[in-house]
Length: 295
Image (cartoon, rainbow, N blue to C red; front, top):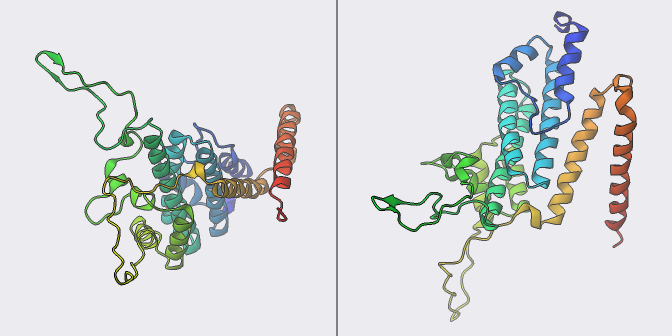
């Protein structure tokens, strides 16, 4: 079926896939149906390769945004993740491909939740109970201070964050959930071929609330501190997670190389790009010496 598209059409399609991620990146067109229509003329293998490239490209952008603690960027790539998942679903790609897309969505959602909780911790995002605008009456403002902080709902709908009814919210994959616990929960959900948010959230809860052992006789159980906040495990405090995210980001970049024709790189840009790449590689090599296994 690939003969239905010219070489130029395919090149333009691949070109769209491999453009460097940025805040204004158009990995997906405004309508997911447009992307599905563009890919539907390809054979199954070509569709899988194109969606794999979309996933790799978007995952690289997401990890870069998380590493930079760029919450608006994380929110943007969360939307991209949902779009890629819908494309994979509508094209009826292989189960593994759809699971890859669903896993990406869960990671993007946790990234947003972590970013919001970190913003609340450092005072840039409103916490529960804080007011954004002052109350007023017939005599004017009653003394409350106008807050210039963002609200969590500026980034994600509150129903998605907290969940409604039986639906799990993003916070269920964040609050009190360490990075390694989330990874284990995600792996277990994938093994069940069920990466819905509700299933991943249930498994996160099971990791954070283990059964209590029987207390030692005559040993009183300490009273919990009702006012103490739940523990929060943020991204920026975990050097291992940050380094592993860079690792995944580089893997995604390497996978994208197969879609790049070296002869088609703009000669006017080659010198600059090569210099910047070599500079980055040298920094990575220098750092990796500090992370040697014999330390």
